[in-house]
Image 1 (tube, helix red, strand yellow):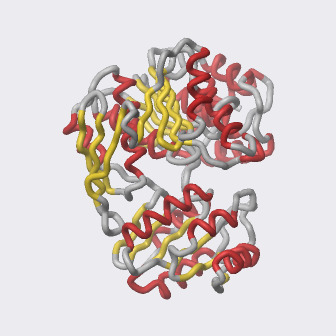
Image 2: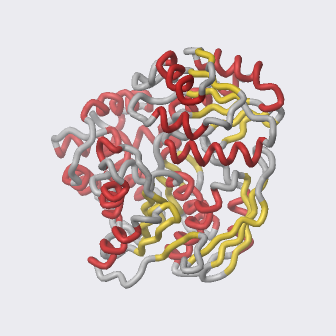
Length: 435
């Protein structure tokens, strides 16, 4: 296959076939692939972000802040919600279908030259690095797909290694304890990287410190609420409605007051993004540029407000920790009018833990399904909801119908759609049809 033969549709079809190859517990393949592509073959500083929750937000915010300071910046995140092109952006603009197809065409040619099978994520990671090289980016912010040790993004040597936090997720692949998961994520810390830890790393910090010391790093930057944290943040004003403004102070190399349209849980991620940007630039930031950039941020699928009266909010919380954070955001912003929660979850997730975290945050639950073959059937999900909440959820397998019923029954409280990014992505795909 040559580059000229590749359209966006054929590129996506080829990626779908790659899914069957699973996850490669090795970096040999991706190393060979990028070597054939000749990337990264230009001067580029990398920021790599891992963590159980918040890593997409931190990656996007860091990229936006670096770009706003005048540097050509690439951002690679996953998964996408509607189109693969969302995953690769240059200065905040996703690749066009044609650009995406072109870089994938080059990657497919390189994969054929290497003559081995690659996973979807390896192909996409190579495409992102190739796109960054073609576009001469000066900074590239990469979100880890899973863990850190064998993740395809670890083919690069980051200047900044950010770990947002560690919770139990992907336990079948990363380990059944926070310590085991932390050991895997710690591998993004390399000889040349500055490690930055978020407050979610509490209790397993020693694992990251040990990894850092093995490369001769004398210290790591901690971002949190404690006095001993090198970079501290404090919430000044919380939003009191969905889509409202969050204001916080961040105290580090210099002091910043910034605002963002997001729930309070994004405060920790904002502080991490500011820290990562400072370290990447080896300089303090322009406070006005930083504030203006963050005020303009939108977080697709992360407490994303599609409607305000009554509220319609999308949040891809897919593990108990993320669901607990969502629950807190609901109580902060919805007040006494709790929403109907439309819930669709994948089979390999801690379904009971997610429901338990959301219990008490909904006026009612509607169990539904998304288009993924991995989605738990709505009847099974409803049984879990009934057992955990002692309530009777509604069962509506069709997501469109579930959303319509939720909006009908939600009243002033509105609707929150959650449980999986697949569920959220499906709603976004028919967003224009929502009355």
